[in-house]
Length: 239
Image 1: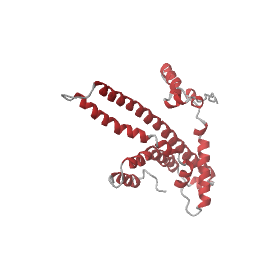
Image 2: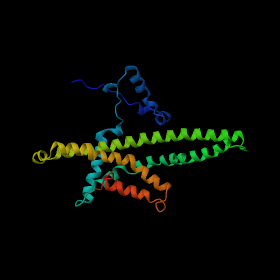
Image 3: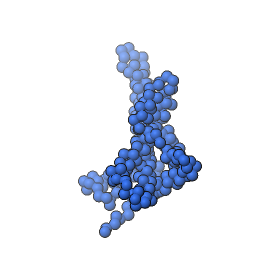
Image 4: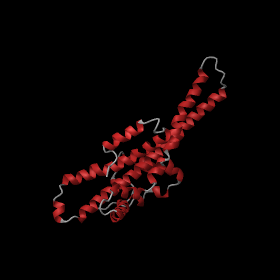
């Protein structure tokens, strides 16, 4: 059986500018445009922190520690939080200046519209300054948003891999009788449905707490209503 030839990931040696603008993916995109498609051998190897075995080991270690702390009622959510720590929240901090730019841009645009009013006394240099600020804000907001989406998607995928690996390791530890009592449909549902929920939760959870930082919950109770419906629709896992 043929094995895949090693294809080191250029992200490991990429500089900060290449990481920020995703320039390390350019060779792969150029190769796709020349060939018209990509083979499996063209794809880069995952970075060490994205290896399934690495993420599964971290989650499994925290799960065993949770079982020792609470043998009667262990919580997978607590084990997941101990595995993730503050990383998803630190990624979500990027959304704060992004949302600030989104608020600032229409305000500047309102000031710019006054330049086009009849008998406007706004100097031309002031209008050019506003236009430059609007363009720069759009530019930096786009960079922040794309970088945040890349980081949180990567982290969410890593946690989904950890959940899938934990399910796989649990299946390997089952006895023959217990294994045959579980249908293949239940296993498929765990991998395709339940393990996906942690990924979707991480993709959206930062927008919840960032919105709370911009709108006080006592003045804008709609965020609490949204959380209530998300909780009851099981977008956020309960146990």
